[in-house]
Image (cartoon, rainbow, N blue to C red; front, side, top):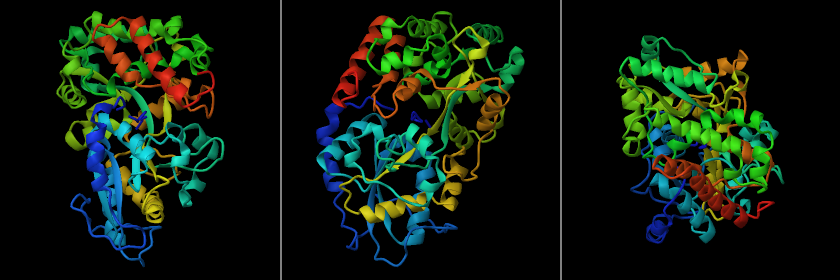
Length: 466
């Protein structure tokens, strides 16, 4: 969320930087068209000698340089880099990779789409409703036949009104949960999943008794704070069936929904009870990951996309970590797991200079052999029906669903997004709103500021009710 979510996994751009950034981008994106022969850029990804086993990319054309852009976190994960290396080696084409800070990328790509000064391909959360689809080129390749169209519409790969694909979901389906240290759980005599809020509180008390911080938060990041609230919020749909629809259609404000306010207060109470780290506002996700593997904490919240971080940086420790589910509600029957769509999507702008080559590049990335190579780096289950490497966390969480221990349901934010199919509601930067609460802002004030932001954004997008 993978959003993303993640997946999706980094919103809240600082627009004050855009003007200076875009001046630099204009120079960086000036490559030749599909019919011209382009020289490799100094910013191009390095080619690999490893060939792909299959490809839909042509090899009988003059080499072309296409521009590709995404943000630091996704580039650093290495999976799309692998696909680019294979593509360059097999086709002779070059990919000029232009990578930007996480917290600036959303505004950068939206501004570039509006101005027409676009890259050939960009990678971001794969929901077409995040954009004006008229700014995007429809995609067509063998991979589209492998995805259920209704699922593609739900997660935004395809537009609900015309059924065309505008995003290629190259990343894994995202699962959010509680990542835990198995050894510390054993020492404390506890085990997941935590079917009720009280069960989680009891586990935190047991962990404090063995001398570790139960939960480390990484609230310095632009995206991690929301995961804590998302993960245990699935029960809200059962407690208040009208909640998501009323928020999605602007019939109620978040601060007017008692169940939502109560959930936020329950999460914040973890700090007041001494279960979290005091330095959470200056802690990054990398610091939280290190604390987990070193046994300084027993739990962090995140998505299954983080498995790749541990596998890369702490390979000898990754087997000692697991992922489980939590419920911020009181009824064990409401334990839920959000199993979203792909957290990573590839798009081609309508104004791409090398549109044909850009689409061929995407079809190459979405081929079986290349997807399998990417999932060796970032494991998971995909929406394209390809048998790729899955992580032990995916297996553990799917097991809870298959056994009936947990339901596959939407967290509160996804429930709002999905309440009215195709509405395109923009929920704004929920993570920033929740992070402000950890800084001392009152719950009502924080929720009202979040509402002011998402209602304004949704009004601009002409979402019904706003």
